[in-house]
Length: 139
Image (cartoon, rainbow, N blue to C red):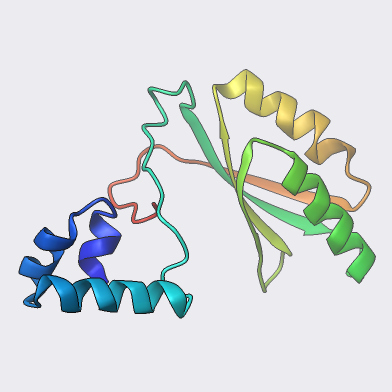
């Protein structure tokens, strides 16, 4: 699993060599993991700077209502916002943690004002600007 997590494009022959299996046994195991839903997909790791997405934030969001309707409405709004690349419903003093990726501060301000600022359920917004990511295991 670690080898595939590090390099999803690794050839079956190389993977088999690294994990000490025959190529046919290795292929069967990978296929079994895919069929069992353990491996749910393969992704490309993109260079955000090269894509013009140099401003990354984590945002804590508190809702004024704790109803199913409020949560579903907020989640729909976040699903429609292309800047939101992760939306997590969490426990604690706030309800959501978002990962938002924008081109720059002014585009983040537009998101903050036009998306979060127009949600009738949002009562608290705390932004944490990512200055660097020395370890990032997301694919």
